[in-house]
Amino acid sequence: MSEREILEALRTVKYPGFTRDIVSFGIVRDVRVDGDRARFRLELSANTTREVAARIQEDSRRALERIGIASVEILAAPVPAPGGAPPPPHTAPTLPLGEEDLLPGVKHTVAVASGKGGVGKSTVAVNLAVALAARGARVGLLDADIYGPSIPLMMGTDEPPRRGESGRSLLPFERFGVRFMSLGFLVERNAAVIWRGPMVMKALSQLLADVDWGELDVLVVDMPPGTGDAQLTLSQKVRLAGAIIVTTPQDVALADAIKGVAMFRKVGVDVLGIVENMSAFACPHCGTRTDIFGHGGGRAEAERLEAPFLGEIAIDPSIRVSGDCGVPVVAADPDSPSAASFLAIADRLLKSLDPEPASPEPQSPGFLERLRRGWGSKGA
Image: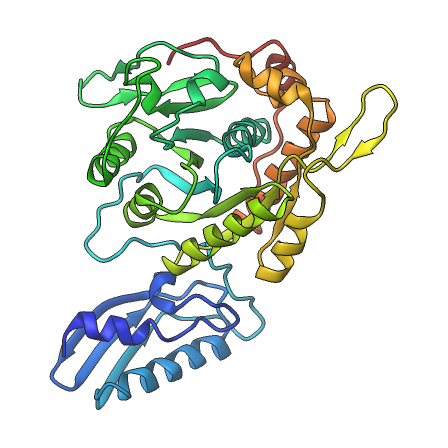
């Protein structure tokens, strides 16, 4: 019997109350096997109840007995008296055994993804990053959309990146309180990136490892649409806190969004929520509301998939204009309804990442005023 076989058996043990298994949760440590005897350690969080710990141990014993293990020794971290709540599934993300953490200074890495293109995923990623910064978080933004990098345009920077003092790492750009990097800074403008899977995986790994991100509370990663190599690479190389799925209300987009949710869950990544973009349009002249792409589909699918619904973003020409001008709407007009929607989504995300944080206070009015003026200079 091998350690791999032990881990595969333990992957059948679900964390009580969740659909995710204890191995992908990252609580299984130091697996040892000797013939028909196995030993491992459960690294439980401080607020795990005794009942939950006991159930995990019992289910683990049964899972190993089914594959022929006669003696199981389980070491568990001390837990408090009954009454604590189980940890959310994204509070202890881990890497597969043997993988190196490419982002040691990043507390939470959040993928912003979509099942198909054209739903405004990059717009949501950019404005979410600026909104998180406005709430006091230290934020990074990585453009992992290898084939269609749009962060340089939307963040208003087109300069080549600079290297750090060592010459081995790239310095991220910084505007609106957000550090950001994109493959778009490293290839010729308007050049088509025609790469096969291995090249995509290598490029993404280098963007993660070779950029001096520093200490961050949240790194927002703008993923390419679909369920391909970039998504798999990120889930394997980074301790993902979870993924946000962006969709429009229409059925065609929702069908692909469902596939995105299924893909992340299959690789053990928690879905932090669904965002419905282009939710409705209000005529600026008469105020009449028109559901151009339908309405409510994102919320309905979130309920059906048992995923959080983070919010709706209305169709607003100012979102498009500000993105094209390189000043996201949260920075260009922080008091607008559209900015308020992004800020509300940021609040819900922060709460899910840190249910009881030593919470960062929202930035001062002076910070918002700097946003109105296009805070920050181009470059690092």
